[in-house]
Structure formats: C-alpha cells, structure tokens
Image (cartoon, rainbow, N blue to C red; front, top):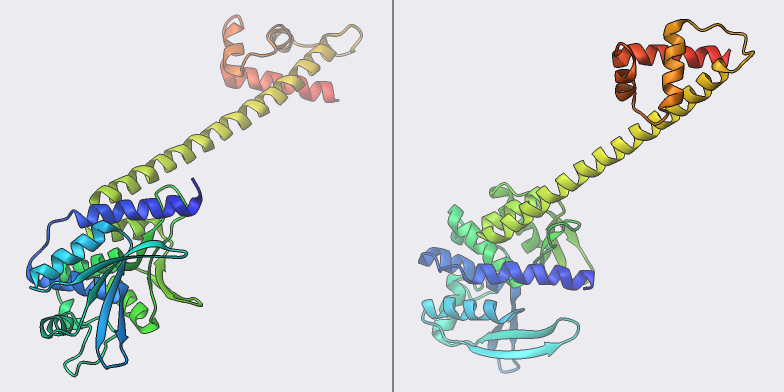
Length: 312
C-alpha cells in the first residue's frame, strides 16, 4: 500500500473512533461544532447578498456527527456529496441565512455580533479544559491528519488562515502540547513531529484506542531496536573472539614447531596444546578443559603471553 494511503488510513481510523464517542454536555458540543466550522467551513456570498456556510468533510461518519451536533441545536442542514481532484469524495453540509442558522453561527463564533466572519478561535467557547478538548476534536475531524504508528511521526491540523493556525498552536500549548506552525503555498499547518506529543494529542481528543495502538507500536519498535543492538554487539564480540582465537592458534603452532628455539614452561605449553586441540572453543569453555581447570582470566593471560612470544 502506498505511503500516503497508509497515512490516510490511520487518520480515518482515528476519526472513526472519535465519531463513535457519545456527545458531551451542551457547552462541549458547541465547542466541537465550532471546531468543525473553523477547520472545514467556507463562507460564500451570492450576488444577491445571500450567503451560505459550507462544511466540507472527508468521511460519512464525520458528516453524520456534524448533522447530529446541528440537530442538538435545533438546526437542520442540507447534505450533499461532491467529488473533486485530488481529494476525491467529500461530504458537504450547507447552512443558509435562515434566522436560526445565523444565530447558531454566532453562538459557535463563526459570526460576530455584528455578523462579520471570524477567523480566530472563539475564546468564550474554550475556557474549560473539556471545551478545549472538544474544540480540538472538531478541528481534527475537519482538517486533521496523523501518520500511522511505527512510521515517521507527523501530526497536523491544516487550515487556510495563519492567525487561526497560531491560535491553534496557543490552544494546544494550554493543554501541554507543543506544536509548530508552517506556512505553505496553499495552506497553513499547525504540526508536530514528536511521537510523545502526537500520542498525547490522541489522548486529549479521547482517541484512546488509537493512543494504545501508537504506544504498542512504539514499545515494539524500542524492543526491536534493543534486540538489533544486542545482536550487533554479540556479532561484534564473536568476530573479535574469532580473530583472537586465530592469532592464538597461529602462535601455538609456531611455538610448538620443531626448532622454534623457545622453551615453553609447562603452563604455557598446556595452553598452546589446548588451543590447538580446541581452536573454536570460547575462553571459558577452553579453561574448563585444563587439568586442573583454570579460570578464564588465567587462561587468557597465558594465551596472550603465547602471542607475545610468537610475535618476538
């Protein structure tokens, strides 16, 4: 599966978990609905002065949750589908300028009391921690994405307004999440590349299953890295031991050859003969073959002395 599809797949999995959450109290519902509007809403004015607000959402589950939130505030809206390149199928919820719809847009901070479009996070809706989490949940459902666990970390909220992106950055900082802002040609991203921050962000949204999957993958990754380090260390140790044994065999063979001109003491001769007889044994196993058995340190000292004598 292509990398981008894997990325989108996990993002949609997180959003499916979020849309299954029960609705909170009314002030949190209002904050979540505001997050949806600020993350995916567009304001359109017709030639006759009539205007509409359009929510463009990526999945049917998110669209159903948005309609459910609107219904909680006695607002009905039109649902449409549209297919555009390169994003594909989108679900659009359209609100007009009916009095109740205008009132709701004012309640969620999209329109000011003077009926001007707002592009900043409405502070009055995010005073409590639960409302901050609900607002961020709405924004993520509208325009968020996150890389799958085990891949390079990237979690972002993609908006079209720089001031809104910086507002989101400050709002995330209020709940201990450090994000950064980057401006692109077509949008602005409030993002993080830190795994711990991305995992805590999922917990803040109440995507606990996704958080557990993330942590499980992270733990497996750490275990795999440790196993690789240990395996590499063992391999390096084995290679060093093999090279040392090779030098010891060569030294023993040279020193025991006729006419070498060096008289070996009984302990050194025994060590040389042991190494020639058992060239592939480790020092510890070779030390047990001596009579009486030697310590590993004692045998190592004798073999090192053999190599020094042979080099002379």
